[in-house]
Length: 221
Image 1 (tube, rainbow, N blue to C red):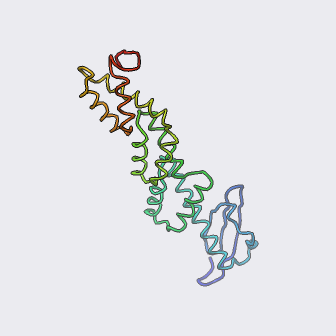
Image 2: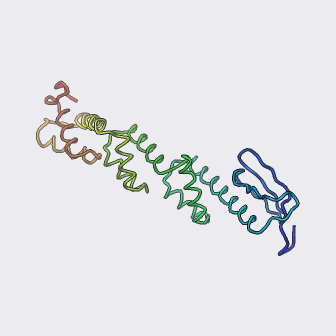
């Protein structure tokens, strides 16, 4: 190992298709993306200029951040805000963290939009809910409000939302006892509004599926 203040030399370079590994004379081993290797990298045995050495360390740091991100995403899909908080808690500096998160979004590996789309699909497969519930839950999880509303509308078009409201209404009626009177209709509408459906859509769905009086052929739901 070189003494304090001594020049640092490149001892070896192993370059693969996606990753590179550099050994330095101070005992440091850097692993970074092959695409991050600078074109003016010195030959093995030569001194690495200080500015270039700093750039190599920064590239290696970004590689460590990317690896941590992939581990987090392997466990579960997360919002950008959640991922950023976890990386900062792991003592990664904010600047490089934001750079890597931006890169993930640019390349389509991960973004709040991808998170929101996948979350909406999973939620809609699990139970019938309306756009407002989707958008509100996404916003609470850290997705920007405008994006949350946009994705909710894309994943649940108006016609599909109306059909889901009727599905939810049928399920609600099956759990009720008594007549489908005005009071029951109001309760059903409140239930659907609580599921995120617009008041008008909720009211239409409850009336359309009411036992003995709906447009579904008059059969009990």
